[in-house]
Image (cartoon, rainbow, N blue to C red; front, side, top):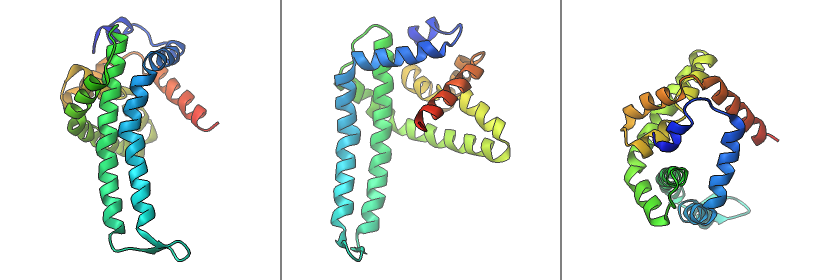
Length: 192
């Protein structure tokens, strides 16, 4: 992937991953906060406003004719802005881990460049893991572990959508049980 990924290719240490995450966030709190505000906070506020203004009567919850179009537009806007944000944050994180200071403009440029491939990659990843879970749970878990670095591979290595899957599988080889443990820790933390 990059120098940062190659340095840590030997063994994955969950404690180091969590510690590294907080260090990157701490060093880039303003950059990442501005990106999140622009690409998530503002669109969410606009969506909430559109939804609120398309309800005529709060008591009866009567909907105006354009309500469902506004919902569809809002969903599309959220899909696009979240993909841009994801690409921007991945780029900023990789830059930080390589010892460079990411700028908001560079992060946004990368996010804008990568948002269409990221949407395609996310849809393919969702469908593949969903089918893995439907047929047997274990294949879905193994695919999720093998392909968890597909998005960073797409953004940082510019591998293309299908190349990102193979690059992610290559990078996670030998560490998938640790990645699974990290997923379990994250799911447990989310439910606390």
